[in-house]
Length: 442
Image (cartoon, rainbow, N blue to C red; front, side, top):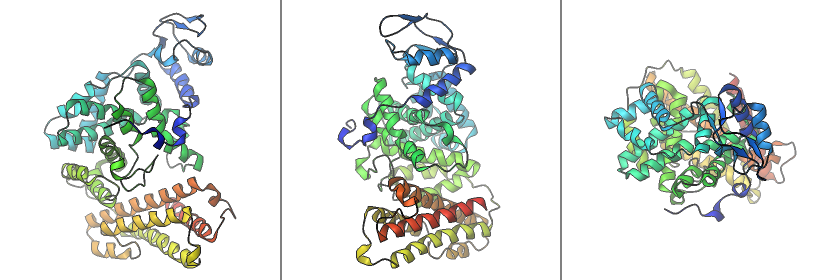
């Protein structure tokens, strides 16, 4: 597999990485940890700034990064208790022991070593170890998320019989896939916070930032940077940052995008993960590599925990889903067929058609939500299936709204639409966003 085809990389990838938030976070780390110079630090003009071994506090760090240095600051400092191969292995062991998805995957393999050995081969040059340390110490859970994805990727690598070198590259890509998030405003971490259009653009750019940081560091195989760049893509083109489809996504990228989704859902669902994951993977079958899903599902078929799901909750979710589809049909009917054109209309129409087809394939009926609950007929397990299907469909509706308004922010403004078709899109986003917000508050 070759490296990324640069002409296909979005324009954002050609811009320098903004270090503002990263430097602020690292400055705060200097207050909590022992940070010191690992070598004597010189300015670019040869002036000695501080001696090797000197303690660096927040104020000194802020002064250093204002200088034009002979070598990058991250190559010249260290943190006490910095992330290492041993600490990564300890984290992997902890997740296997305590988290449902890693535990099930290790049990399916019958041993832990296939999940652990590649982690020993992950290159950790000083600047990368610094970033992983900042991730661990300043953003709770982010390094755990990285490791959870690495364990899923390594499970798939073992099932596919990949050679040792490919497994090490997958482990590396999984662990480094979110280092670009260290350069984002950390307010995105606040729970239940809805991202603005600008913040959503930054989130969608983090695979690009991560890829650039890996390339700048050097010493990593091109496959690592490529897989990192692709870890939020989807086979049906609904992912980001390129919206690549099918075989345009590399083989390691396909493993990583599935590992990203499974690890995220495992964290979200907790002990209910084995039961709910299968449903979500079914719902997203058009977007995911089915051969890899087929490797995962048998390992995740643990006994689902009993659920106290309520039929009323499922009914509310499916009522909103049905209303969203009905509203789009009504809005399109109010526009002359010849005027139903333009990129905003085409995107929304295609994404809703894809979601409708996915729901049908998963056993749902978007315009007749009562049918799913009728089939449940008091069976708690089936009601839980309906709830999980509803939650995933609502999340996808929210994502569709966000993607439309990110690309055409004027549609969020009164009278921002430039055509009848855009007006229909704007009205649908407004109505659907309102329903989703009301459901969240309830």
